[in-house]
Length: 88
Image (cartoon, rainbow, N blue to C red):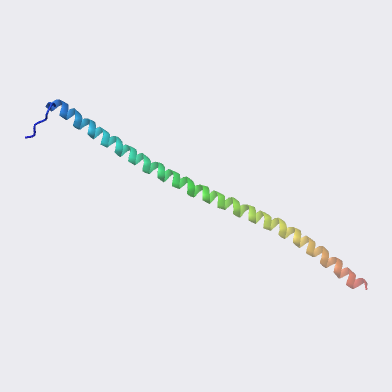
């Protein structure tokens, strides 16, 4: 077979185990990176949804508030103009 210059069989086996552990560590690091990336993406999507819901809520609140004020102003102006016509 192959001659291992300056290395005996046990040293070679130990070196192989270290390489396997390094590859295993790299695999765990890769899996962790994928999970973290997925987590960040999920948080971004949730944040965008929450931001959208807040924007819709503020818009609807502003619409309802202004619609109520405009309706009151219109009814008051209509009544005042109606009285002016009837009084003449």
